Length: 72
Length: 246
Image (cartoon, rainbow over all chains, first blue to last red):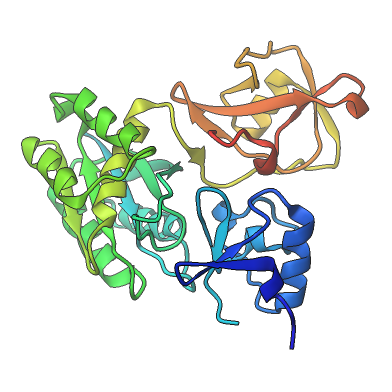
């Protein structure tokens, strides 16, 4: 089983990415292990070449990080 | 007459984005000869746990011209009802800026929507004060999208908010242009430094990778910065390099 839970903390039943909005390396690692990465709408991606959580359609931004909407 | 059309909360995690829905709606409006519309702007609204935005809490707005207002309103309402994603909370706002007696009130609501939690009742109360100028409607779910739809119209009217939908890429890698050439080739109105200084037409820049225009002072604006490795030339900022508040 892939261990992507280590990238998240639980807050009020939501899975919040523990590394915030600016840790590209952690977001890349997490997306690679997750296997559910899917490109978001072009307008909402930070760029069009990096497969990381920050470009994933299953993330919802919060004030300081993002919440992952996938079940794992 | 001039109109603004803005939609919000039309998508879910797996559907097409709100911007694409608006562009498709614009195509249909134009194909049917109901209106002519210009570019789409994306307006970021407040991100807060109390706001149940469907995915990003941004609204999408365009402006255009029509002589068939009632037909446009009917068409947009039907289009949104038929094309919004399941589980979304869509809202539509159409504004006639020339008939809006108090633009300031709308602007205040709109900019507050970027920094504070607003409510649907507040949006409808504002719209009802200007029945000749503001046409606000909800189309399913909670209908909370009306907040962003109204705010998006105000932000577009302000001329100082949002990113222009789409991006532009260099035709060849690392091409060098004067600012004047760059603006002409890529349809940009002006180039600014991050200190908001206007770059002169004869300044040189290197266009390295895709960039994004902002809607500032009613103009399609591109920000540039200098990178030591570019030999002192300016380069247009990528989306990722843009300031957070841009």
